[in-house]
Length: 165
Image 1: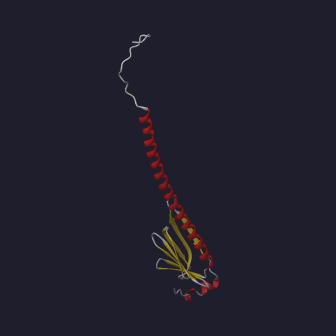
Image 2 (image 1 turned 90 degrees about the vertical axis):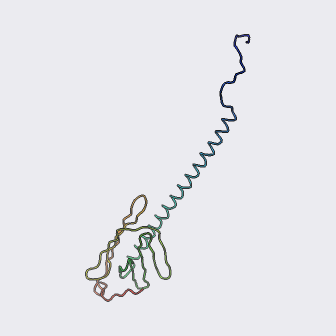
Image 3 (image 1 turned 135 degrees about the vertical axis):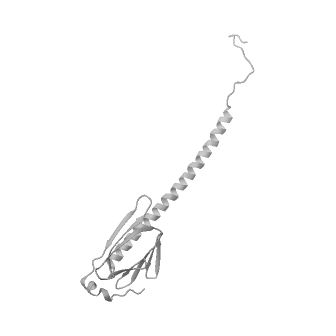
């Protein structure tokens, strides 16, 4: 007993020491940091895949636009869209998981999924004058539509056009 009348005992109260609390905080912060870095790496990978997919979709649209504009005649044969102009023949092969573009001696592979390919043909000919399809992307599907106006000379001579490749 002391002067104020309190009774002291040697019994300890149950509590955590400062070292135990600091050690728990350090371990939990390391675990949270590992979880966050794993989440960040997965998120970056997903964003990179979305970017590459949209980059391929833009490239396909640009090359199809250019080929439709430049070509003298267009034919659809065996899942392949064939563009013929005075200088070269370009082929676009559509598969479920990718599109192959053959131009001259080069081949480009675009890793995009396409669906709902539909064609319009010039009456009584094999020439394509309209083409429509969807690119299947994660946030939303992108629909593309292309059309070609042929000159009267091409319409008249369309039965004599050959597409050898």
